[in-house]
Amino acid sequence: MLKNETLETLKNRRSCKNFKPDQISDGELEAILDAGTWAPTGMGKQSPIMIAVQDKDDIAELERINAEIFGKPGLHTFYGAPTVVVVLADANIPTGIYDGSLVMGNLLNAASSLGVGACWIHRAKETFERADGKALLEKWGIKGDYIGVGNCVLGYAAAEPKAALPRKDNYITVIK
Image (cartoon, rainbow, N blue to C red):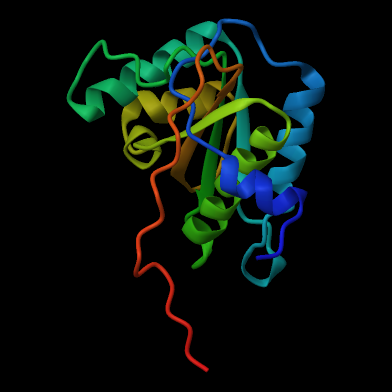
C-alpha cells in the first residue's frame, strides 16, 4: 500500500477527549482555520462559515446549551478544550451541510497534522435553532440564515487518545 505524510495523518488522527487548559498558539489556530477554507464546496460557493471561539464565557455558554440538548446538564461536553470552532452552513445552499462537513474534516485533519488535539462535537444544529444559540450568533455579529454543522474543539491533548479500532472487513468493495 502506498504511503505518504498526508495518508499517515489521516490514518493516525483520533478524537481527543481530554485537553490541557493551555491555549493553542495563534499560528496553529490560523493554520487550522485556513485549512478549513480549502475544503471542497458545491460549485465552489464556499458557503460555510467558521467562528473561532476562545472566550471562556462564550465557550461555557455553548457547552451549557450542548449539554442540555444532550440531556445531561452540567456535563463537560467540550472536554475542557480552550478553543471551539463553530462551523455553520448557509441554509439557502443545497450543499451547505455537506460543505460544512468537509470543512469540519479539514479542521480535524489539519489539527492532527500540527499535533493539536481535536474532536467533532455534535448538536450544533440544535444549538443554533434555540433562542440562546441565536443570541450567541447575534452577540458575535453573525447575520444570515445558518444551520449549525458542528463544533470542532481544539487544544493540546492531556492524554493520548484511544487507539483506532481495526477497520471492518466489509468497509471496501471494488468493482472492476
